[in-house]
Image 1 (cartoon, one colour):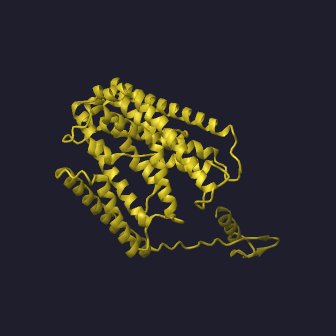
Image 2: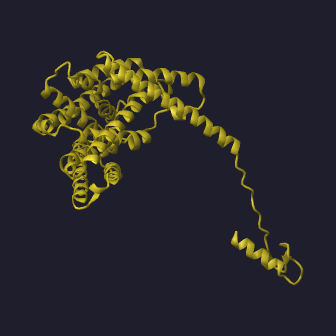
Image 3: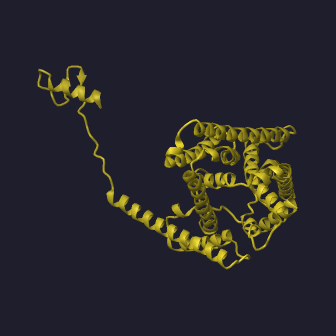
Length: 387
């Protein structure tokens, strides 16, 4: 340290010849010591090589999933959707990784990777490519299905789960506090009908467009609302409290509604700000900068909403709708086509990765216990709640 060096210099300049940190009268100097820093380069190189091999395997697996998606589309295999194919591949790869590997870090699903890397392109592309006319025409029915339907499903599943825990049919469920069961109800109410939409969207089936619009709109908002509901319940969950206060559920629902509205306002506001910047600048002369700025505003909206404890999914979805409606006219033709293709491609890749990791999670997930009886009951509760 600086003080130790100064003390050593004083010792060297001492007229009594005590220059090596010896005692000089009543004062004592300390010689500086430098602890050598040893870097284990061999271990770092070994870790890097292992990660590189894992990256090669994951990329090769993604290529297989994309080729399977092509095969499914090409041969019109409706009984095996693309998402199911990716999950099956993930199950096989996850099983092999569990058998032959000891370090499963890169093979295990990471929530932060999902929320901040994989999810934003999927949500933004859903809003950006949305058929706005059909969505707006059916906005009342869509919100009714997405909001009221999710709430009904959450409370039906949650209280049925609480009931089987209270009666002792399933162990491990808190029999005194229903908030834990409601957290599960909110979590399981997020139904992602990607497989259904991929089948309904096929031109060969000529599905009713009204039905498709309702299912698509509800599926996009359902996930966002379920996550907001889960976060809201989590704030009010106290494992130490034996009883749930009568005023907690109404307050939680009020917080849920306010979080939903504020999240939408954040997405709309940032979309309008972005459109204003594009309109009053000459960015159209630089297509690369146009596309880059659009991409950055996408992540800014999501990160900002999450940073202020709102729903990034809800904010980003409506941000995509606003940018698609108001900002598409401000883009150059090159940037307009490029941005649509880039976001569609990113959404396809990240969605495939999500389903792949879901499949691998069967073997690489960190499960404390497994209850087959509760799994069967939960499926029955979900079917009843969604009905």
